[in-house]
Image (cartoon, rainbow, N blue to C red; front, side):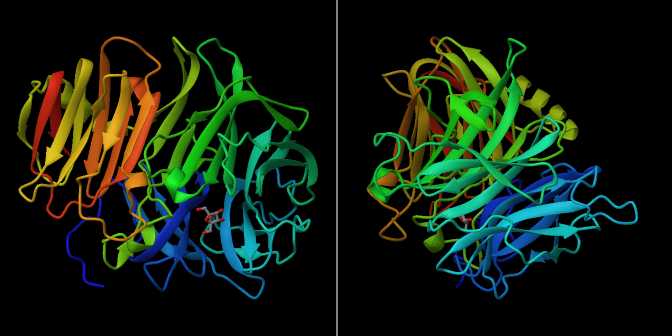
Amino acid sequence: MEEKRDFRPKLHFTAPKNWLNDPNGLVRTGDTYHLFYQHNVKEPRWGPMHWGHAVSRDLYHWEHRDVALYPDKLGMIFSGSAVLDEENVSGLGCGGRTPLLAFFTYDDGKTEFQSMAFSLDEGQTFHKTGTPLIENPGIRDFRDPKVTRVGDGWVMALAVWNQCWFYASKNLLDWEKTGEFGPLPEEIAPAGAVWECPDLYPLTGPDGETHWVLVINLQIPPEKGGVRPLYWLGQFENGTFTAQEDFCEPLDCGFDCYAATTYFNAPQRTMIAWGDNMVYAGEAPTGEWRCHMTMPRVLSLKDTPKGLRLASLPLVPEEARRKAEELEKKSGEKSGALPGKTFVLRVTGTGEGSVTLKNGRGNAFSFGVNADDAFFIDRRNTCAPFCESYSEHLMEHTAPRFFEGSWQLDAVLDGCAFEMFGDGGTRAFSVSLFPENPFDAFETAGNLSVQILPL
Ligand code: FRU
């Protein structure tokens, strides 16, 4: 298909060509970050799933590597995670080389089970063990193993239809079920919702205490938003997760943030998510490459007037800190020109206010804070619908603020990828935008000012 407009982002990861979805096997070896990802190597649409592979030192500049895992007679290679077995508890290491273990789901179109592969050369080549690590118990949706270190053992979180199951292991090979989370009430997980891609990790709060975060991605009907990435705060004890009462928050409030997962062995809790939505991503007008990842986001816990909340902010590598200082010095504006296809934008305001990015074709994208003190995005007029499923249900979103009074929004537009972070990252939105021409100007309404810096 002909590429009509150059939507390819500069900072957001994309595959050289063809289809990409979930980030998989996020792991750091030495000072190298690996990004494996769901990849159809033949077509720019979802199909036989491989694990693509890229490496980076800073999570922004990526070097593409050979495909790491190919489908085989047992099935396609669905999503999963990777860890380093430094103590060689698996016994798969040899000659003093630390095994990198990749856990994934085999899906043959009918059934799913968990399996693994290992690498003794830091992810360049993998050997599949070919055996089920965890057999299917007779449930169609049974996938996306996320393995993490807990104490002196290992835990796996697994998405099992309308639940998350937990398993424990000492040697990373033999797994025993230890707990379940879910199902959820209908207003959170509507009928037909399928649970996918769990993540589980501890974070230290401002109170110095350890809090556990459980992330679940729900695939829900398009008229309910298509996807719902959710998180809970709670405790992980005795092999199971218990959520704080009456707590359930979106991990991201945009339409294009899914299958978020965090790095194993990174100095900070760092997350990457798929920056698209399965409902319409296959029709996105990007040409021979399709879909991108979100920027790497650093996660922390913040106190808010509504209680403790997860905050996500883009990782700012050391060299980019200078840019951040440049942004601070920029004068605030109410309207003006936009500087090219990749820029960062800081909006500071009080009360209701909006920023609209626009072009000469009459395309417009708005975001800001509404009269109810909620952050919002509105992409209704961003482009002509490029397919039926890019529908009215997936155009506007709001999320009430956790704070009161003045606000700040930090946003990045990068090709077709827009991400915005409100109130210190306690509200994040990721949306894909496909205007017919690049946005070249902005205007505002309300009591706010905008600082802009090209990247
Ligand atoms: C989520 C997902 C996973 C699955 C993978 C297949 O986007 O459906 O549950 O493992 O994508 O590509």
